[in-house]
Image 1 (cartoon, helix red, strand yellow):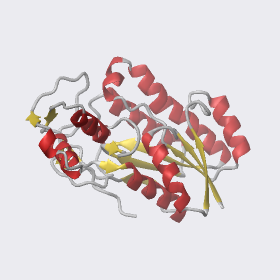
Image 2 (cartoon, rainbow, N blue to C red):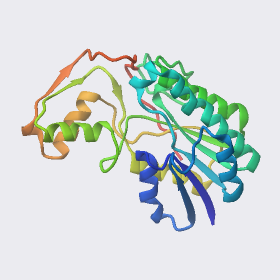
Image 3 (cartoon, rainbow, N blue to C red):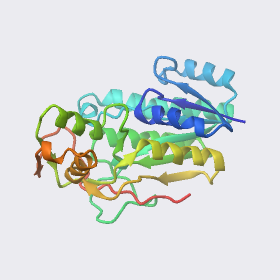
Image 4 (cartoon, helix red, strand yellow):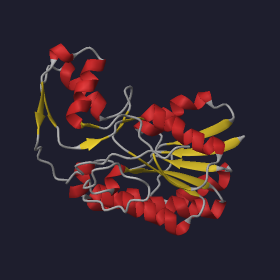
Length: 261
């Protein structure tokens, strides 16, 4: 039986892996959140790995607040780059295969076609830069790794995400102003969770992967889809806007071309 450590288990992706884990009785999952494992503390990581006898580590822990990363970039780099280096160091020492989650925001959004794993990253905000540095730390240290870039993550049942924000706003009677000039592919966390577990189960060749499960669309189109799916279209007005003031620059188009497995 494979033993798989999942870090960041209180986030929406870690939570989704936990919900899906019962579908994979051949794998023993061990879930750690920030309270039970501080990924900034290399001694804690070392102790956890030394006693765990893990085969894989799926690292879902990340600093994902794009706006806050512009104001406090050190926190973003500490979690998304330096802590990832810690995990990679201990994975190498214990011969554990690392599966790491990255982002479409490593790209600048200037490409009209979907981004492939062969395109050169060029992040335009601190969040994207910190995630790219995390990727590079893994690639510098580990041969046996999987880096999976994804985009626009949402869980319908848990966590803070765009899907739940839209529904909460509608239920509070708020109209919405949503940008219609940024394009990507929404990704359901349950489906990404299964994709990651398939990687662990089947032992695909190591390297870089792209995965998103939704059709390409703008944030405005995604918001409309959410309210239509929940039968709430008549209760809300969604306005398409072109400019929304933010601290962080956002890629205009960050559509990923999936890596088939």
